[in-house]
Image 1 (cartoon, rainbow, N blue to C red):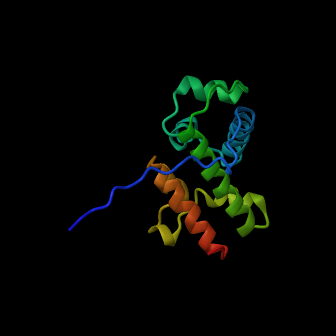
Image 2: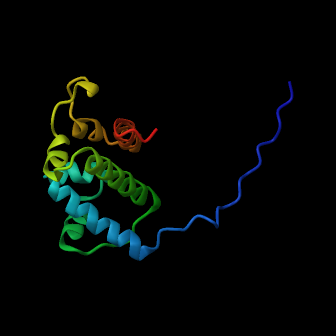
Image 3: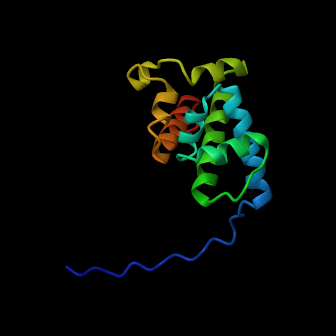
Length: 137
C-alpha cells in the first residue's frame, strides 16, 4: 500500500482576521457576559483557558492586553453559546440562569459543569448542542 504525501494547506487570505481592536472588544463583552452569568473569578478564568488571576483582574478593570488565538477562539465560542441561548429564550434572564441549572441532556449536570471541565472541546460541544436545539443543523 502506498501513501500519498499530505500537502500543507495555504493560508486563507479570504477569511478576515480578528483585529487586536476587535479582540479587545470581544474581551470586554466576555467580561460583561460572565457578569450576567454570575460567574466566580475561578469559573471565569477556567472558561478562558486557566487565565492567570492577575490577568483576569486587569480585564475586569478594563485593561486588556495581548490576546492569543486560543483565547480568541474560546471567547468566540462563548459568544456563540450566548447567541444560542438568546435564540432559545426570549427572556435573557432565563438564558443566563440556564447555565447553572441541572439538565437531563447532560445527565443532571449543568452547562456550567460541562464547561468547567476546562477543555475548548467542551465549549464547542455545548455550542453544538445549543445549535441543534434551536434547529440550526
